[in-house]
Image (cartoon, rainbow over all chains, first blue to last red; front, top):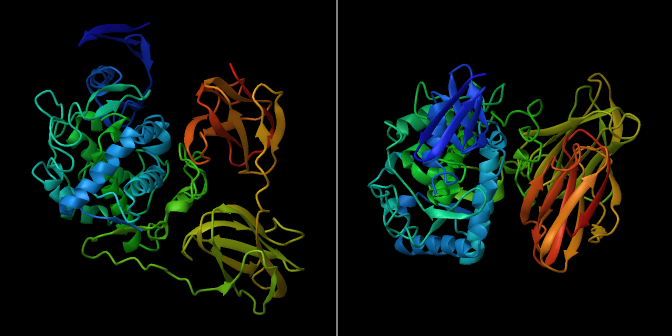
Length: 67
Length: 502
């Protein structure tokens, strides 16, 4: 069981067994295996190099987390 | 006819008219409904897939209808963001149109959509702060040049398997921006270049979204004009909602249909651009109206014959309004029918061999207004024979079945593929209402209203029991419409539907 937790701009990011949570809300994401890039419904026009980077971008760039 | 102009060339009065219309739609709550229609769509149904281009074409068309309505100008078109001349200093970013870049916090503080005048909404529809822009902060790339647009327009085919962000070669995928190793990310780049509110699924919060997608749509239009032998793909085989004749996700009923097939011809749906790139031929307003023998709807069959082996007969059908039509042959010949359109003899919609009586062909389909072409041949290329052909519209609309709130469920069935059942019901006091289906069928439910059969409120697939659909929300007083279809366009099945106040 792998688990990683960090706080970013007062939001809690948890990556646990391949699941991503921001403030306890599970965030669905897609992994582009070929390019090793991560993306999410929240940010449909961009891909990120890691789940952590994706989570930070969601916190900064969506109205759900940056209102 | 909507005339779409380069946003930088709009006159002062044109800018004022457009801005006032947008502000009116915002004040009426209609603009935010457009934001939510995009934000709450399944991402993989409208992005990273073939329907990306037709979905957004129809979405722009719908907003344009609203802008024309509130402005009183039937020719008002959404202007396009002409990327090669649309960087930070372009006049479209002046305060009489879009306003400019955000401040150091990214907040837009000038123009009609500035802080204090314009609130963005989150994906739940809740106001969540000012509009934000951060020009060029998320990318090192400049906006596409004319040369890069020319390069894009040479890409074929329209799309390819696996019909997603890994499709290559694919005009759609290159334009969308997922094949950026050898050029700009075009559509994606525009979103990232503006930054801020243009990054999430709620990106229509920034009115430049519509100008950006108008440019995307213009490029698809130019690609279609330059490459008339290329067509939308796929016809079949992709996930539901992506094939040419599938209804698209989060797209309401209107005077044009919900399928990619219904929006393939920009000219036919009343769109005109002020200028095209050098090398793009002008659209022919009525491409091939005189080809084929006229076949009039509801006037009885006409007889004909295939008198030489391998001969094809072509019929022209002018469809006046969106409805279900039946095109069929009769007689003793084994006919084969292929339907093309709208307004094109190149764009195949569907084909049929023996769907009619005996060995006759028959096509039953919802068609939008436009000109369609039915090609008839005999199944055997060596045969000759007589046949008759007719086209009929579905029987005049019977009154829409009425559901009563808190009454027992009404039993029904999707008895043929692609069928939709429509019900109406009245809400007499504002309260939570639940509309749901029960039974063994995987239903898909769409709710429209109040008092407008075309105004989509919410859609649902599987929130009910097993694969049934269920919508629960507060409804104000008025008349509402519930549309039920099978999740699969190819399947049928029974169900029951009810409305309750709880």
